[in-house]
Image 1: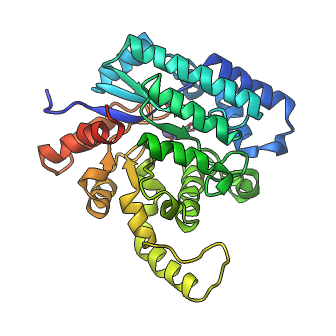
Image 2: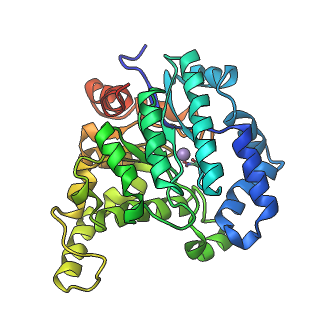
Length: 343
Ligand code: 1DF
Ligand code: MN
C-alpha cells in the first residue's frame, strides 16, 4: 500500500442527454460550422472502432464499471468534469439548462460515492450572468470544487471582458477554474485537420495554451489577482516557454507593437507560476513531469489520468516510480489536489 491516496484530477464523464445534443448538432449544422467538433464527436459517436465503442460505454457510466476501472488502476478518487466541449456548442438556453442538469447529476453520483468522486461544475459561457450564478450554486449548494470550461466557446475566449463576471464569481468563491482543451475553433483548425493534428495529439494543446496566454497578455490576472486556473497536459506546453514569453512580451511592450498587448504588473511567467496549477493528464513521462516540478514548484503539479480517453493503468507505475521523495509523491497524488480543490 502506498503512503498516499491517488486522486486523478482530469477525469471525463458525460450524459446521454448531452450526447443526444451532440448528435443533433452533427445532423443539423453544416460540416463547416465547427470542423473540430465534427472531427471529435463525429468520430467518437459514430466510429465502429474498439476505442470509440469503449469510450461511448465508459463516458456515461458513473457506476460499477468506472469504480472497477479505478480499483484496477489504483485510483482512489476521480475529480469529474463534463467531457469536452461540454455545453459550449449549444445555444445559450440549452447550454444553461444542460449545465444545471449535469451538475445535479454529478452531485448525485458524488453523494452515492463520496470517497470515490468529487467534481467540477459545468457552466455556459454563452450566458455569462447565468454561468456565474450556476458556478455559485454548484459550489455552495452541490459541493462541487470549482468550475470547468472546455476552452473556446464558439471561437470566443475568456479574456474578453464580457465573460469576466465568471472570474468575479470564481475569485469570490475562492475556487479554481479548470481550462480543459477542446478542438481548435473554425478560424484556427484548417491546417491541423489534413494530418490528424486537431485533437488530443497536438491541436488541443495549441488551442488551450493559446487560451491561457490570451488571458495572461489580456491582463485578466491584474484585474483578478487571486484567480486560480488549472491546466491539464502539464500546462499544454507552456512551462517550456517561460523564458521566451517573458523576453518577447517585454519587447512587444517596449515597442508598443499591439494595442491589445500592453504592460502588465508581473512577468508572463509570474502569472503562469502564481495563478496557475497543472495536472499530468496524458503526460505520464518522467522527464516532462520532473521539468514541470522544477520550473513550477512541487506544490503546483497534480496527478491526472484522463479517464476514459487515456485509461492506461500501467501509466500509474510511471508516476509511482518518479525519482522524488515519498513526501513529494504525496503532494503530486494527493496533497496538492486536496489543498487546491478543498477535497
Ligand atoms: C481526447 C483526449 C478527448 C482528451 C477528450 O475529450 C479529452 C481524445 C473529448 O483523445 O480524443 O479530454 N484529453 O484531455 O486528452
Ligand atoms: Mn481530458
